Amino acid sequence: MKANNEFKSPKENRSTLSRRQLLLGMGIGATALATGMIGCTASGNPSKDLESNAEDGAIALKEPTQTIDTDVVVVGSGMGGMSAAVTAAEEGANVLLLEKQNVLGGGTNFAEGVFGMGSDLQKEAGVNGSLSDLLAIELEFQRYIVDYTLWDFVVNGAEENLAWLMDHGVKFVELGQGPYAGIRTQHIYEDHRGSTMIAKLEEAARSIGVEIRTDTPVTHLLMDGDTVVGVQAENGKDVLNINAKAVILATGSAGSNNELFDNHTSRTSEKYMWCGAPGLDGDGIRMAGEAGMGKPYRLMAPLVGTTVEPLGVASQLAALAAMNPYALWVNQDGKRFMNEWLVRTAIYAPNAIESQHKAFSILDQALFDRLVEKGDPNVGWGYYVYKDAPLPDAPKELDQELSRESENVFKADSIADLASLLGIEPTALEKTVQDYNKLVDAKEDPALGKKAEYLTDKIETGPFYGFRVKGAKVNMFGGIHINSNAEVVKEDETPIAGLYAAGVECGGFQGETYGITVPSSCQGISLATGRRSAQSAAAYAKR
Image (tube, rainbow, N blue to C red):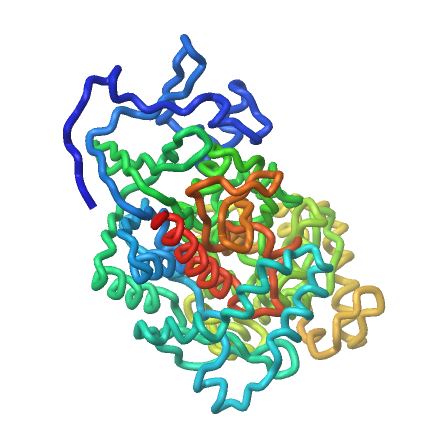
């Protein structure tokens, strides 16, 4: 990798992207760009690094303070980016990996495990299910809206890719419970966190010469006509032009970008809380659009579970309030709208929340105390808040939220007073509570079908608690259109020369909901696309 610090005059050295290149396929013009319709932060502010040239209508890149030459640039350091960087280096490429945060790993740091096949753990557990059967179940679950040609190389490479991780020192401590026919493909990382895996891949990357730079956000692609020839990035006051033969986008989709969420999914961001890693703003999607991909492709929100803002999935209070099947749930009118047991499923409760303007869970003091002191096998949140364990931190969290007058946590001495705090007509909520208590007595719920084993707790012992519940947005899928070589393609399926993508921002793997039939599919897809993109990019770089 060669650094070139020779500077020409700004007039001689300025690189520009034409307005057509920047906006091609996005369906927006200069006015929309100015209002931050695409390529903005979660707050909706447009990128500040664009300079408008009134004379020729072009949008110019910044003047670089340093120029670097390499073979492959990888943008992002989660599973997709790290596996791409290591694989590309193993294929003989000179690799530079850029991460905009000050730590590596992105959303993968919080992942629990990875999809794979062929491990000793599976052999010891007697796992012998067919991956083709598992894929068939996933296709049926998603009503065939997913792209088989993409899933095919993920599934067929499951054994090789898992072995590749283990060859690089990644350890797994157990298998997750597969949802179908004993097909247990989820391999749980040490400490139940992907950060341990990222550390191993970082070690491997550095040992084979991958240069890694953190605190270095990539702002734009460099283009030569329709071909991607590098990236522009920033590090403090330095502006870097990095000339590369191939670029791999692995920036983790757009989970924290509410504007993309609202404009390109069927959901409403106000009803969800972003619980994932910081910085997943849709940078890769924007850059692929600049290169001519077109509008964001198959962007979807894999909502998993429910929570209370701003507490998130690791909060004991949020688990008690939002992942509790014994509570009473009501909408903005004080009416029940779902079987509360659905909070224990991966996707149904967030879908039900989407159907209402607002959703609240209601608990009394007796139920609150029982869960704090004894826990419950049906209350918890994955590997963050364990089921069947006491919740001693919940009262402290409750006091903190009440003291700061949270807009989502409420306490009152009567149901009528609680209703007023929630913005519900008091008599409506009082009647719903009375009717619900009768269901508990009868152990029957004819209208919504809540089972007797969850109809155990009346709402009758004050004080009473109300929680505004939201869907938990822990990651996001899609946005970038790829083919089975992990090349970024235009709307007509023509590949964009020199541009590849990896990770969950690759569209086509999911439909309108989370792929719950393939546990740890996010990591499995990221691993497969990371390695496939690297193999394709390295081969392209050798031409």
